[in-house]
Amino acid sequence: MSEIELRIKLATKKAITHSVVCEKFIIDGDLKGALDYCVKQGIDAPQCSLTAKSDNADKMRSIAEKMLSESKWWARRLKNQAMMQFEHEQIAQGLVTNCISEESFKHYQANKR
Image (cartoon, rainbow, N blue to C red; front, side, top):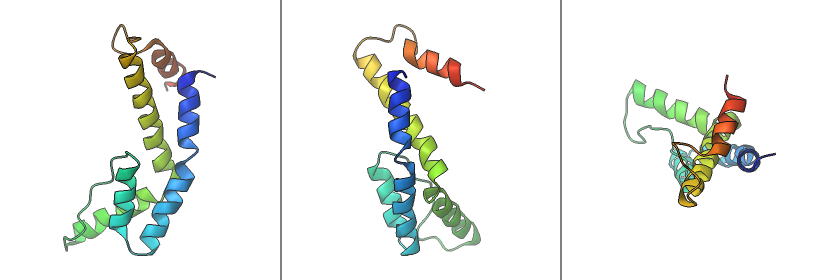
């Protein structure tokens, strides 16, 4: 298993834990707490207004709650985060000669659809 695949596997293992934590915030009626938790993990939180009063604002809050409580949503974000961190480290070490490191390129080629 390559380094990038190992990092992705380790990162995505935490998806269920993060979704459960956010679900607890949401059950307690604390969407702001769930959004803050997401940001603390280094993940961009879903965009929604916490104070607006309209049908659209309610819909966006509902969508954000659903996203934050889904482990699949977390897994995708954690995977992307792990891949970006790996690539930044490769750049810092001078291992990127083109636009992407060799290991990342191999990973993308092996996993493309």
